[in-house]
Image (cartoon, rainbow, N blue to C red; front, top):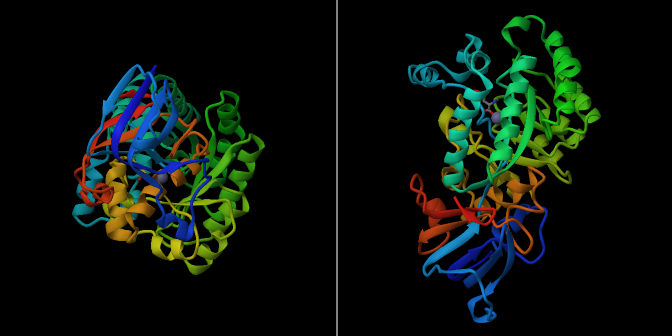
Length: 411
Ligand SMILES: N=CN[C@@H](CCC(=O)O)C(=O)O
Ligand SMILES: [Zn+2]
């Protein structure tokens, strides 16, 4: 099945050869073709170029996109969309003056989600989570990473990871799974964090690996959660099973998690709301992608990742949603890029690069996703009629998506 899209006002994020990622000043460059065509065959991008170079070809279907643009679907490299219930009450508690940290200290937060998740069946968890997956697909996300970490027992963590595996099998969106056993210390191990880490490493991790349930391993490296030493112990254990590290670091305190990530060749270090000069320095010349989560900063009212400082220092940056019930109950990547422009002073070009090619890199998907490139997946967004691509972040809270194609089909 071949489909030809013609008269595309602007075809955005085109690549002759797939790039790994874009960093520093390169992030301001967004390669596009004006008045373009795009040809797809089944689930793959076949050809693209200027309308004046359109060869005479016989296709199964042709669509004239006058006034509309095409860009690759968003690559959301950090989410927790498999969860049970919600934490609306904590939202109200925060409005009434409690902080996110105070709520967690009172047994809310991640432990609240773990309690809810332990009580429901795998089938119910699948139903609740698939709704969120469908929601983000409609909002233009074509590849997503999903973490465990709301189970905190062997049974419940495996339940989460099996749900992620089933979602991956049943939907056309690319999904990468992350084992985040060390997300919080569960109630039963309140005064025995070492005992919990032993369980994670010696009991749960081997089962996760045996059932082939995860691509990555993650840990919440933060005061009151897991120390740098804990994180290093866990990442080392994950290495034995071929799990690539990604770490939650510097959300509330900079305690050396970035350096641990770099040391263990983490694919990404995520959050980074609190960044010291030495954290920026240690990411230079590494293969680790820094990932900012502006919707989390927005929802919790905490600082935004200092994107300007980081990009101006030559670093790459990816943007992700962090969709989860506690700190970011939204997976809208259109809002993420708007917020990155408005609050982090990223340009539209930088934000689009960060949410496409760099997001793909942060999931090891840059060979197949993140750009309009021959041979990559036919995953793209068709916009409404818009005057320029800057309109996408400019129209915050009001996305300009007309259609989303995943694996060559409209969803
Ligand atoms: N910070 C750690 N984990 C999640 C939120 C967890 C929660 O509050 O449920 C995050 O990335 O923001
Ligand atoms: Zn997270």
